[in-house]
Length: 129
Image (cartoon, rainbow, N blue to C red; front, side, top):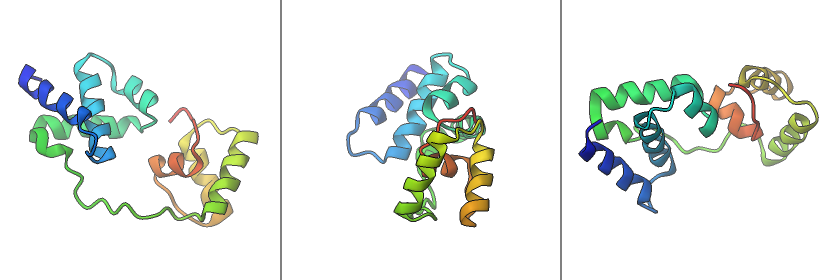
């Protein structure tokens, strides 16, 4: 990453009105440029390591335009507020090791399918991946 590209990404982090997902992408890219591993960044930012790697490849191919969130719906999750609270309580008393375990529990209990990041957000869980 060139110094000017880095300055541009840092300016995204400092924009208070910037979309939160764009800021997360910029933050991950800055951490990659600092020499941190995709795995370490994923753990720190509660992301799937594949997401971080995808963001890196997109940035390398498209530059700053890769930060745009195309087609993101910002829709509500599949679970009601009450179900999310119930899920958080369950995960506090029955910790799960992976996002896949959380996803399986959500599907079995609530009949809803979630992506790994979606499952982590729905349950506000902290798993290994």
